[in-house]
Image (cartoon, rainbow, N blue to C red):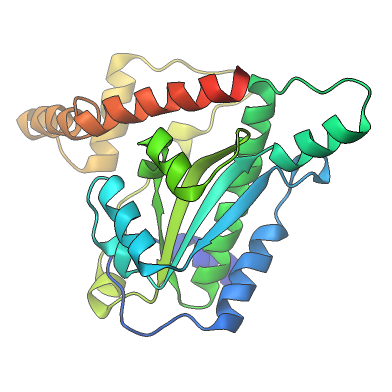
Length: 244
């Protein structure tokens, strides 16, 4: 196993950071690594916001479900699905302004998260931890105003970076699913309820009554909650702005 693959296996979300800053050279490596990512048609359908202002970090921490560690991160990057630059240049030079539609957003979103993962892997290789913040998709309208976003630039993923504390280094990485449970050959295998139950029992390490309690608690924590309702509302507002 080479070092790159070892870094992928070792990487886990880090939410507590030391006070040691990320150097300018390290940040440039992280950002330039993001730019090396595959991109549809070499269009780079994303932009990156480097959030430096502390008050802005604190505001984002509040809006992203009140997670204070966001404001304490030495480096906060927002990866935006961004078609604005291409829309502007097409409008200026083409006979008919293009209509930006759903597929353009899907492509931009792919570009966005691929670039973000490049940044995460680069950081991991330098001993810098990271954590994805999906909650940046909440509160779209006020975040759009806060970040001064144009019509075709949407905040799709936020990642915070910093050097992990020893406690974070020692924390056991959550167990992933097994390959046979996730990889399908040629066509999709729709698992039976029993197969899905067996898969989740292996992943969670829980069985019987404990497994039932785990699933119901997980559902309450992830699905029957206000943040999910807000994220869905916000996502609909983003899609409406993009396609109107």
